[in-house]
Length: 360
Image (cartoon, rainbow, N blue to C red; front, side):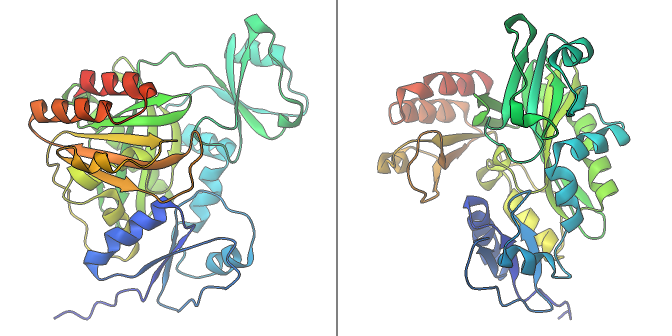
């Protein structure tokens, strides 16, 4: 017997699919996780021993968010404001000497010629807050005389275009006692800024694992972070450069639900509840395919090895509606399942599945 006191409830600021998967991961641990709509009319019944986490980097000021933010056990509360603003996020990376694309703020007086002079002929503007899945971005191309949108001054940063070889990510967890554990680097396919698929682990990336872990651990320790944090990275030859950070469970880690003994969602719940952490065992190579703007198809459930997650959201083109994980040490099974899946997904998935088959 121990006298450890578990939290009465873990509240998740936001009630999207990430909150739902955190709730699902908590059930075997006998923990109660309660995602909450930030615009709910009824305030949460917060108790002193409750914990608060979030499935999103930023949120508007509502009665619900104010109540949660004021709770003394809102973990990483100060981190969210730092990482939600791309200017302060980039400044932190520079401060910690972690490689990232050359950048600068877009001030009132900033003009296109100065950005091209300092950052090159192709410059990517990013809104400082908000923006995801390719939204909130605007290219300045000197050859096309592109202009800064009128309302983006003081609301954006400008980054030099990076001619990277691949997009990868690393996800790790840090406990309250400072213990850190990391998943293998994950190879990512993004189309028009939206994640389409991941493959992990990938043997050819293993020589970069230590460098990626050093980057992430530096951030976790500096922030005194508790829980799961993800870094999106560019691979340029044998070096890595940070693209963006996410202080939460992350789409590129969904493969861990099938491919690891501890998923990213369970890791986060454990850390928030101050439960023991240990190294996750990686079961076998895993593939994750996002279901973007697709209609529900029960035939997915008949694909051998497929683990389907359907979010129950209303259909909309370009919207993440679910994902499918497949994990197997038998590459012939992986290939056969992916080929079967090809016939059950829209035609635009052909390049995505070709990419996955090439990289498993």
